[in-house]
Image (cartoon, rainbow, N blue to C red; front, top):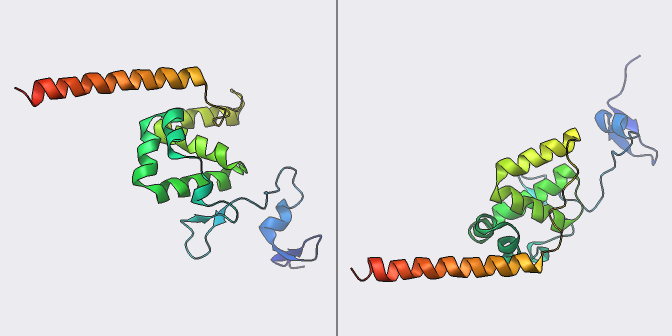
Length: 164
């Protein structure tokens, strides 16, 4: 007896064999609002619901994870958007803000982010929520420290280099 390459799903649609075999596995359902690979270009992902205007403001990336994700968003907005959509697709993360926060953490420190995700998968660490609200005290301290560093660097450049 030969097996066909497609099986009928419970709704009567024909499914590829691999999908038919995985249809009844627990936790295999993919939310319908997730981005999906672009049929015309498999390297890109398209979102049915979210657009780049739905992303949180760029300054949140700066406050949450520092200058690297901020600069990435300013200089390569398409790369950033595709990274967020790809993360959503591969991790089945339906929350756009959580996916963005994960990619901000990745662009800030890829090795630390990858280690965290690896340990989460092994069960050695609990899942970390990168999109938790910003702590106001931390924001004020960061802005104060950043202002001080910019002031000192400006003073050194102004006095030391421009007036020698």
